[in-house]
Length: 308
Image (cartoon, rainbow, N blue to C red):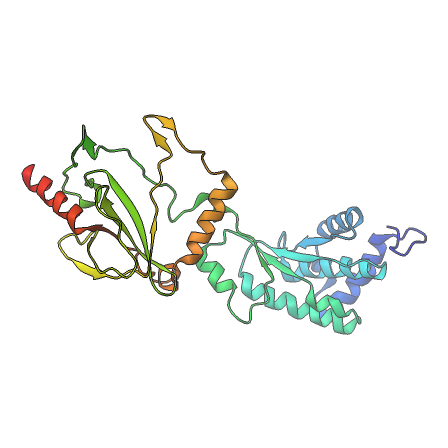
């Protein structure tokens, strides 16, 4: 490998072997426990990407092989004017291993007078979930980056979203589906949907109203029935009201340009950030209520009783 400042090529394998002895002595690791194939792979990677060297430490054993091998190659690169960009862990107790690795980096930085060595970024992965993400992000963690893959694309807590078109009106007459499962009962009539916001700007309820009903106004007291508790009434006073309903399809045709994927993503992110901490918290979040107006509730009751 050519030194960054120029000059004759240097045997990086031989240089890394010299550093490996120094590192093993410092970390009190028998040099014979390190995997030489792993060291060779690190060296090959470093020769190919000397300015972007990053090592996966848990292919064999983090402490007895991956860590000393990485340190040896990173120190060899440093001697030639290059700087390693980080390490990654993909198994085991990620938080504890990160602390041990950080300690080793700081020890190497102090012993060999390489100031940046103690701050080498540590990245972790391995089926990161919301729960493990919270744990790994706690104060005192030595982890710099967390890679989320499997649980991001598979969404195990909500792997599917059931959406079914069901009749709510026939030739202008409202109708509903009756079932013993309240969650599968339909809400009759053509409706409008409003989002109600509190004084802090957080949405606190979505409200369904019949199309012919006047729109709710900011500061107006509303009598509503929350879905799942239709037998109960509650009163709310929104600080701000937003109409959510927009028609994109009518009579089987697209009647308004559909938003692009980036626009959908931005809208979802903005909407999520507006939710109050009580609704967003990981532990025992407060359910977000959806309600119907008194008039829509009365229509629901009349049709239900008339069908029995």
